Length: 268
Image (tube, rainbow, N blue to C red; front, top):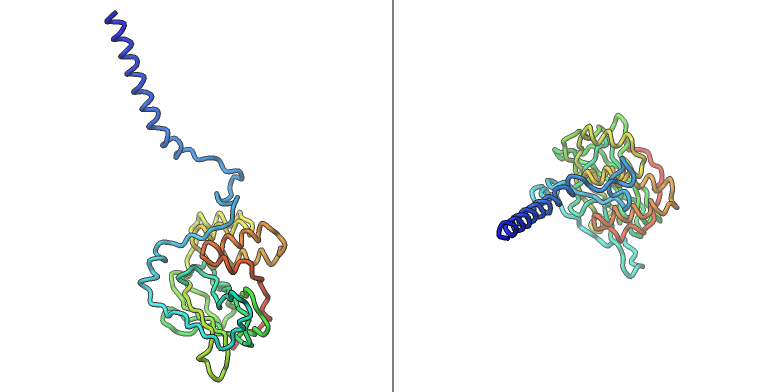
């Protein structure tokens, strides 16, 4: 009887050890074998909207990079909305963004104002002005966008360099103290071979996911804006737009219209 009892005890103990060992390996098996995607080859967040992930070094740079803060005037704002939205750059909260484009596109929310003109200025890393453009904004209110023109008079942004921009709504050309102003920076980066490969296989919607998830804000927002212009009634793109803006705390602007700015010729 003692032999049988000992055998049973040893069997139970051995079985318990196997059970504990098997249990301890379960998390590692789960991590090593993720759930399959519903649509192979597309980003994991494809079932939802794109969410911007800002690179950690850009988050830290908010403290280390000196940046003039916006001075918000009110000389020409029309306060007809009980909850008005100020002039706002469609950018991460710290106004630090990346682009893979030589000539990026910028987007701003323009409130209802009495102003007729706005001004965009771009400075190189040495604070030299390399582009300045006056924009007609009479009777415009909503999200506006424009691209730096690709021509011989405007040098392309150089990889690895950070540029400063400012966007000003000119309330009174004789007294600029009441201007509405936003300022920020854009850094030109090179895409990795892996990201370039993904983009080559992606449609415009998928590209916005790829750019956003890799911290390239300027291209994520401009790509999605272009897709929305092409298909303004597409509910999926509308939801994507809301998701992307919400990820940088601009959800209140997501429902505002995207309006076309008048065609203009670059200043010589």
